[in-house]
Structure formats: structure tokens, C-alpha cells
Image 1 (cartoon, rainbow, N blue to C red):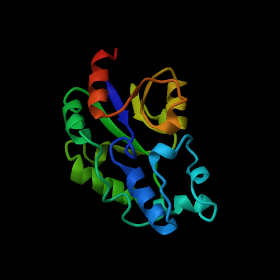
Image 2: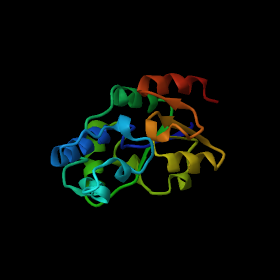
Image 3: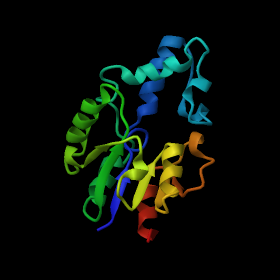
Image 4: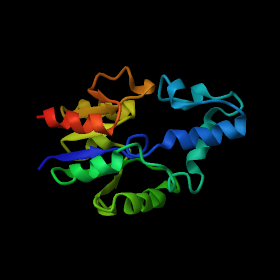
Length: 177
């Protein structure tokens, strides 16, 4: 059975909408994921915010109540019947506990025992990585394994297969060898 590694933030759950909502509310701005042409969010916020944009990721509760992306849960449940599915995510302060609780609540068929926290996803044994972060996609691809991108403007320059949603990912897997 093949092992697929799935990122959590902006792949399974919609982190960007909540993160940007909090920033936009505080800074009266209109930041959205469509504006991000590179991974460095601080390049797209008001100067008085700058790198403080990342402090929102340390606020208690931000990860606990994220909404799943459309069809993520349904597709993951189907995939778990034919693949060994591991959730591989990086984390900040409160996120460890909140992400574990989120998986337990929303993905009980995968469970917290299949949740791995790592900043070096390419070091995790698996056949495929489904992620959005350019550095993760490139590092995994450079190991000779398959990386596939959840398509966002900030990862458009990474030369890997890409999908726009979970139904496309499921369909893409059918052709994956």
C-alpha cells in the first residue's frame, strides 16, 4: 500500500481565509490568498504590520476552528481505504494541540496517530506529498518522489503537478503510478 503525505493548512483546511480575516479586520485591508504571488506574506501587508502578520498564527483558537476545504474530508475518507494516509504539518505554539483536536474531530478515520509534525517534510517516509508550500514541494521533489501542489498563486512557479481542489486530486491519483 502506498503512503501519501497530506499537508493540513491550506490543503485540508482553509487557513488563509481566517488568517487574512483577522489581519484585514485589524488593519482595514483586503489581503486575500489571490494577492500572494510568493510565500512571504509580510511582502503583501501594510508596512505597520510587516512580519507581525505571523503573530496571528500564534493566537489561541485559530487552528481549532478552521473549515475544511470543499470535499477534503470526503475524499480523504475514500483515499484512506486504498492508501496509508499521513497528515504531515508544521506547527507553531498553540497549533500542536489544536491541530490534533481538529484531526480527531474532523478526520476520525485517520486519527491523531497518523498526524506528524515536521518542518522537514522531505524527511518523512512516503510516496507522495500533497502540499502548498513551495519549499516543501521542491524539497520533496528533489528526493525523487512525487510532490503535487494545491494550486495557489504563491506556488505557481514550482514545477510539479498541480490541482485546484480535492476532486481533482482524487482524479489525478487514478493516473499516478
